[in-house]
Length: 337
Image (cartoon, rainbow, N blue to C red; front, side, top):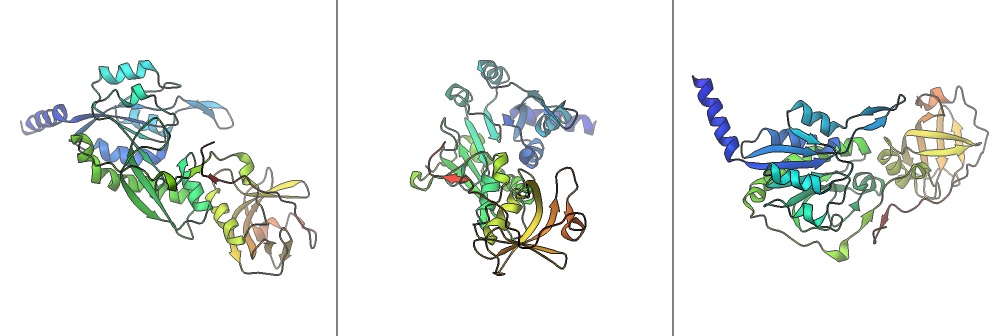
């Protein structure tokens, strides 16, 4: 009988809880979803996410991690190619009251933003107004920032431009990669939403307009961003290697062969000109605009990522060779492109 009473009490709590829908397509939101799904103050009523995409060598259709989580937790999930009037009607049918968004990949219409009583709120992985846009995690790391964070904001039609509700700051260490920093930011979403959820579901969240004179934008990363420009400083290049480790990677071209760097470290000046390679005692260093870059791991096309000592056993570098390099497109701008 006790268990029946508990079940009834749980149903009552759920009946009285706020009905929340989540929109997102990236695993960065999973810690927050796990937290929200345990709460009695809300009912996670539905999920909107991107459709299954083909991936891997077999190019088989694969669900993203958000869809998999929703299915495993018996949360209704919809996967439109792009949210339309159908999704707005669905939100109304299920009596959604609040929408939370993170890394969904769509600019939502004003009608969508206005269709729930408590509104739509977005979590963005930067300390806005810095790094609005598609690659805030990698950009913060590649630029050598010492801190970043997650921002909770009310959504408006303009990308990442809504008024701020709150922020959670995360420190960037000299060991962080794009992957490890993404994990830190994913975890930081939980205390951020913990702090402000009551305000969101009561409709009483304080909002602070963003300072437009401090806005910067980060663009979507491209395959070409992997190319290293050795006219830049070694410390900057080390940050870039760590930031782009998962994708697009960091490469330089040697004798028409692209070589991918797995890890590297900035060193003081070694007397090498930018792009000059020195191989000595199972060690590879490349001259830069300031200092030199010591490379610890390398990979050639079709091969495995290897420690440098193993790599040079099967790959010969000519003495005093100078690799070619070109300027990279800036990662950050003051205007959205």
